[in-house]
Image 1: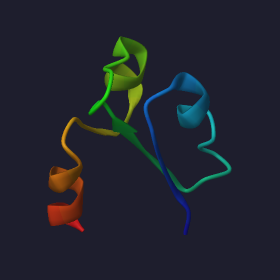
Image 2: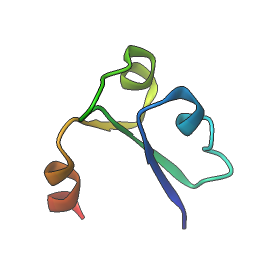
Image 3: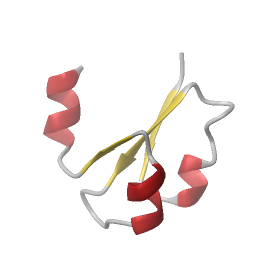
Length: 51
C-alpha cells in the first residue's frame, strides 16, 4: 500500500495511483486540500499517534 502525505493539490492528485492521501497543513493550509482530503492534519504528531 502506498499513502501520500502532502500539502498541495498535485500531492492530492497522486491518489490514485496511490492507495490513500493524507492532507498536511502543518506549514501552510491550502483550503482546497483541506476541503477534499479524506484525512487532514495540521500536526504530524496526530498522524504518528494514529499509526
